[in-house]
Length: 118
Image 1 (cartoon, rainbow, N blue to C red):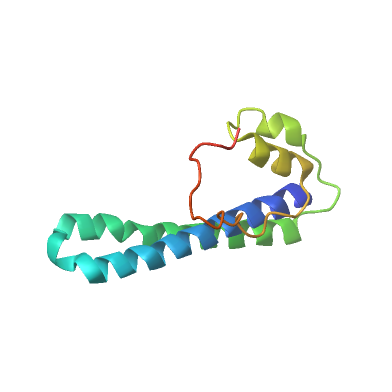
Image 2 (cartoon, rainbow, N blue to C red):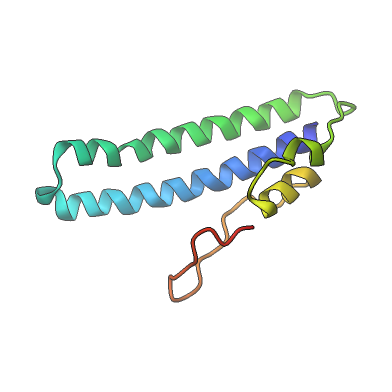
């Protein structure tokens, strides 16, 4: 269980870094195009800040839970991840190793395929 929680903390941390990058980009866009955005749109875009803070809090929680969990706690990682649709995430969590502390870099042309994880 501690290994699974550590891996979950790594995964949440990686998502938090992605959200922080997105938030920075959105902040720049808001500054450049504030005149064409209505108040509701700006409020919706600011939800990224809440997402960012929540992911950081969840990563911290999972990391703390891992460090406080007895090392002999066991859980079947494959059973716990059986319903996850993202195969690579399910594999990392099932292994319970630490490894995905940062998101994968985008290719140099800054293009990527959505929903490629499978």
